[in-house]
Length: 142
Image (cartoon, rainbow, N blue to C red; front, top):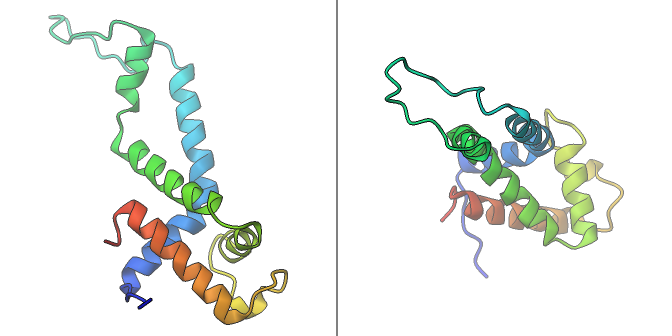
């Protein structure tokens, strides 16, 4: 199997999405709970002419509020990371957690990852596979 080259910038973007996953998941869940907790009147603009068609229900108002590009992007990133993570073997999941989620600011170097039973080369191959799968899901890689 020939390895395809991934642009450096693309690789960095995908790594950043993975590293930010825990924080973004919390942020997204908070965003969703705020929308679900908000009242029907919140966020609904009423014009004096009543030309604005008001949502018919609380659910409709919440659904309209949820059509946010930001929320959609967050959701897609979270789904991408979770989909790939959940399809890894437990030892590979452990590698992903240690490498990307131990330190929010940087990836843990392969040679400092001691708690997994992989060589440096195996870890690089697993991380490459993770990056490619998430990249394809996000549309960063074709």
